[in-house]
Length: 250
Image (tube, rainbow, N blue to C red):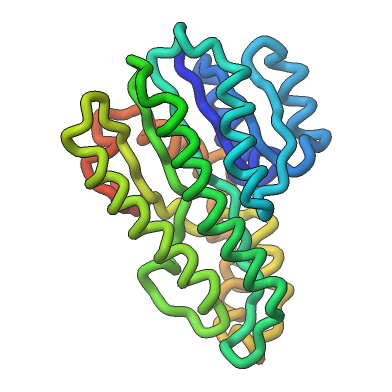
């Protein structure tokens, strides 16, 4: 059995990843603030292989506890692989330094950085003595490597996630059962995050017109197409050879 824990599972890319994993026969636990009708519908189609855990990942305690709760739902002795996919993330605040809403900065760091760090820690700690092969996939962004005015918080949090992935990958080298850890750039996907970008203030995000055009020109990847590529890479022998990967370059 191949088991997967997916954060931000109720919509967008997270939902599409859950759907692709289930189509491939995986056992999935989706973590989201609210399951929502989409995830509930998916659970109805796969009642024996999809479970949901409700958690607010902006709360550090819930971020860690949700993974432990998810693991308790899994038939761990039967799992050949256990994979954590840290997909949940926010692009807000879309604002330049000097104009930050402080509460949004705190929330962005909590969801984009603290939650995946603690979720990864929880997974590695709880599965340390299991024979199952372990993988951690952190959904990052090209914004980790390229500076965008107005995205300084988002860029900083994704850069943090990348270097965390590199560091944990190095830590796992030489372990008896090393986990493979990767930060992945999924490309530009047509999700609610893109809607937030198109609804932003051009004065704070000067490249807004470029992202408007991506939607108008049909240049955004669908969540289903992006998820299919991500899942195919996730289960391939290439996973883990590089700590930071752009799906468009594979």
